[in-house]
Image 1 (cartoon, rainbow, N blue to C red):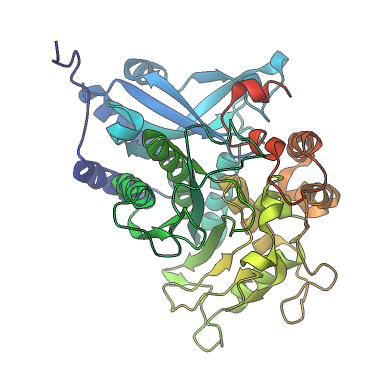
Image 2: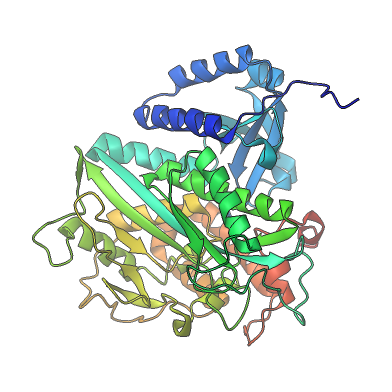
Length: 479
């Protein structure tokens, strides 16, 4: 009776890492080209590999929430070019009377999955959202980002790279966000501090288990450690082409949540789940390569940054308030922007000041980049990168003196102010389009109206349970 009924694919972590690294290399080599060759390659593989039962097709809604559908493998082989789903049930897409949307598979983004996280016999592919007429949906920022990256490569031969330092906090109990009680707050899973926890305490076990899964997915980890706040974690990995980097953000958080769930705890990516300690950020690093050279680098500059790099920073600082709602996309995110806890709310750049919105890290030609520090870990990664690139490369130059924007010296300090700045902005209309901008504002205003306007000194239940990343369909149906 203990004999498995089916022999589903269950690869070791070493085998997974090898396969996923090869897939990542294929994806990099295929950048800027049609995916016809890789589509045939993976369809042939799926047809031959009898131990795969399902293909998980993943997409992201306008707020950044990660969605997945499991398709039977045989169905994918027959109908991969005609996958439809009910868009009216996903916030930010369509109305009920025009609900059918299509999933267009990105065959370059193929992942073999760890069985202890996803179950046996599954692989994962990312997809983009298309309308009935065959055009990309304007609320799908993965497709918008990919199209823009293709244009940059065709027009300027730019290859854009990104890396993210994603922080989160491990808290006691399952579904701690859904069941949040503001009188009790979250209970930390560990009291360890920066770079310190016992080798086998629960935080270290969680970090090790999450890092192992990330390595198996070819993140190419560099270091993993507890962060400044107790029970806080950060797992760093190698930079990648920005479309890969954005996908990895979604996988990073998904894996961390499932590992925590397996340990009967919760990994939360709320920017400020607990008052009195450091919040969680997602420092976002960007560099641009052309003809094999980092065009953000200049050896003779005091900070090693080129004029293109300074212009990129200049444009971002000039529109910092306008795009704050993209970088800090939740009510809770504005608790984090507190300078008493190393929070980067100052609209300036600096090589050393950690309260600056943008930092220029110490670097050589290979690693020269800009680091946008004011990003929350709950931002939509595709919208985030798309917005930073559009503003940084195409926005108006401000000629900022000493790196400080002349009128607004700090980012908005609450969610409603950020919504209004985004709403009034001309550049966000140019970047998003009026329809998508209005959709995004409506979703954010709905949450703002459910929460107290003044943040106060305690984290409120409403800002947690109506957070866009919290999975609770019953609560969202109240909207």
